[in-house]
Length: 160
Image 1: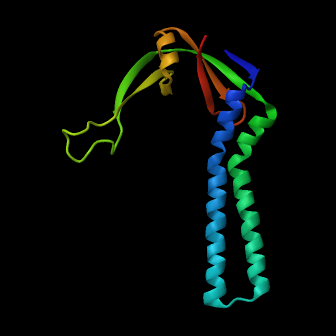
Image 2: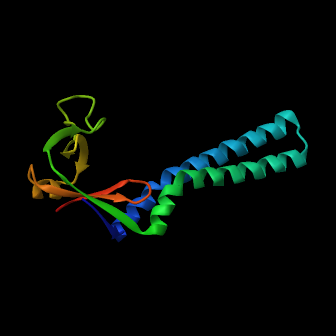
């Protein structure tokens, strides 16, 4: 069953957080392009009007790349809706994970830091969930999967 609701403030924060990759990639493209223009200036002695045109095109290209990466998230924020799909929890499991590099070089001084991850298996897909929702829901119960409208990004899983 599908249902539409408005985005909560936590959902909006999560969508804005997902946009960071587009910004980072645009900034990296801009930096490499500007560094390349410095190389052109010193090594190839290109004319100044060509170099300024190149720099302006790099700036516009980086803005366009950022826009392309974030367009679905921007649509989600402008529509301000999410899709709620109800499904049945098939299985759940917890897994011990150890933080890489957290132990001392000598194994008896400090042990590796342990963390526990909780997973739901819903419709042949495994989802990482928080401990609170993991303890609330039992196998065979219905859960709500909250998806963003355009990007189809999973925002949260709640008990039905």
